[in-house]
Image 1: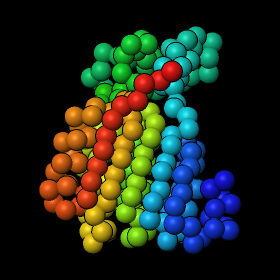
Image 2 (image 1 turned 90 degrees about the vertical axis):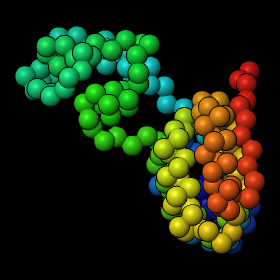
Image 3 (image 1 turned 180 degrees about the vertical axis):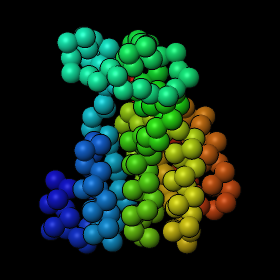
Image 4 (image 1 turned 120 degrees about the horizontal axis):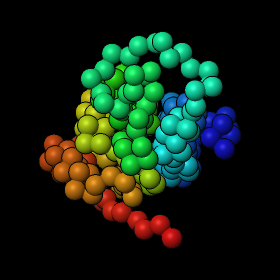
Length: 195
């Protein structure tokens, strides 16, 4: 769908689309190509289940092809002597583990998504609606607005975030700051209930 819009509808002004983390490159190309977009609604299509990934990793047995002689320097108690992970279902996600414990600089899908929006959106974009199970951090939102401020400061943005994971208080705190700076014209943030 995104490729069709990019190739045949470059003058489109209003767009609603569904996206997952595998389509970020397509979203970037769409935003670069469709310069007349002034309203976009983006719905998150799929949420990656980190618990399943954690379970798969924790269920590896000694016969699996893992180089247990490799050493990882970490002060984390989540690693056993052979470098295997001792994290359970209720522990932090692998992303948190890699970023905080091991020190690997992993960017979240939310950060990548907001960075693509801020960096590649047309200066004509004045209304943005984001829906779905995004887990935006305060840092993700601040970075988005800082990039947006540098690039699109002439047209204040109307923003709506319909979300089930990010704290409404976090969204409102960050949005209030950028509304005071004139970057946001208006915003609305609320949670939805899954059926």
